[in-house]
Image 1 (tube, rainbow, N blue to C red):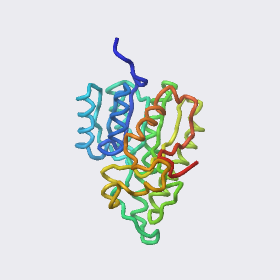
Image 2: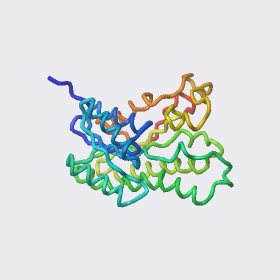
Image 3: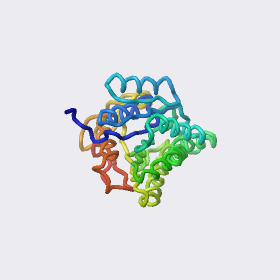
Length: 254
């Protein structure tokens, strides 16, 4: 008999799935048994993630989505339901991060601020609006929002990014209270500085950045975060909601 995974029969949407943490989340959810809609504004990158899942024997669909566009998020939900008939898991991972320039808050332009908020905070809200009706119809669902440990550290010269991730934590708490009666769990994960393509391009010497501040003195990698996402997507977390869990090797102690 084939071994069953904790997410067998479940369907997940992962935004920002083309690379980095989003790709790692997609692969891990597939390995745990879920069918995965790999969604990204970079459709070629999303197709690469979907192809890797297919090659490993999983089920995947690549979807083009700009999470700041309401119609695009509804198309994302609709094509997922057309393919598999349901949405059980939503991982709101898409965010502006690697291309942001660190600068004093007074030098951030209103247009730049608005764009960061549109993707990093409005995006999870819109994606939840698109996915929740399908979850509500089944009486269950898991929403996992990707925040950041920078909310706790108050990382300077990055006010727009820090504020957007603080908003994600606030949204998580509000949705958890609102959706509990529908059987939908809403939690956030707050990774520390993780070695992804974006992080390595952002800071020189990324593999050493902040390592001395952690209880575990090594760089954080995507594989350090994926287990929590699989847990929060599974039935093992059914009585956990509204929480933000920091995964940073003990740099921030909550």
